[in-house]
Length: 305
Image (tube, rainbow, N blue to C red; front, side):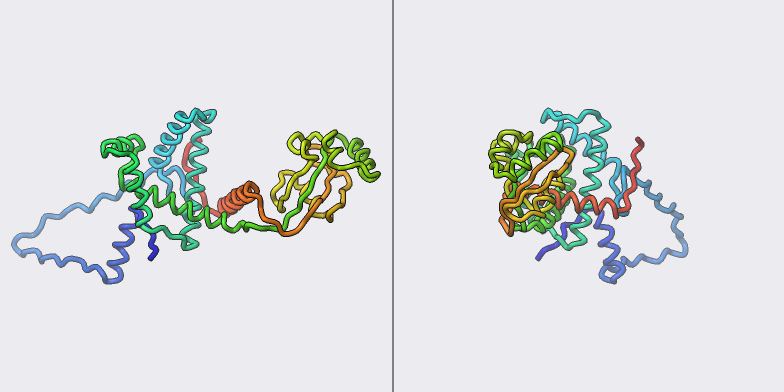
């Protein structure tokens, strides 16, 4: 049976639910003696609200959490030798990542994507065993500012995020309507029109692409772009032209930010996605979901600029 792994903040909510439902009885207190009245006690102090870095749909990202993740991020960047340009860039990156993770967790829970407690415990056990000696495990926890309870929660959140990412990635099918096309890129419209005249006169498209195309990545293969679905190419003008044509047809001159193109569609129809294409579309599916989630979310930023 699947169950959400309880987060530390859920405990008071669970207790309150039990009390309100009658499942937990309050202890009976003895009546005070008439001759020995208890001294009055001060009401418990109101908890001081934790400083926040941000709030996402009402859920907080504490300043402590943000600063801890920033330290971890900058340490990891330093070890990898890929530090961001400035501390301010790192702050913005970490905050945006924490917001995105919060949105993904909220999305996972809204879609009833659950993580088994046993999965978290298995992952935690594997991590500890990989460290070898208990002292090494304790040193790693300390260096990364984790208690075991905090790490357990972090693993639950990570696995929940991955469940949501996997769910979004799985919306990309293994086979889609695609076209197989090739193109020639030149710098001016006049060049493109002159080449179009040659193609219409019977010059081989692939040979011409190898001779004059400015696209170094496809020129050796005669301008071949391979199979691709809608939404994959960075130049939508080329994509639109390729999907408009029937196999064997050549486009008129197509302008993009790169220059001027001639496009020929070779084949079209349902076709298995190339592995790299599917990965790119899966990444796009996650990015598109996050963009929409950010647009509709109530996000409050409390960090000073």
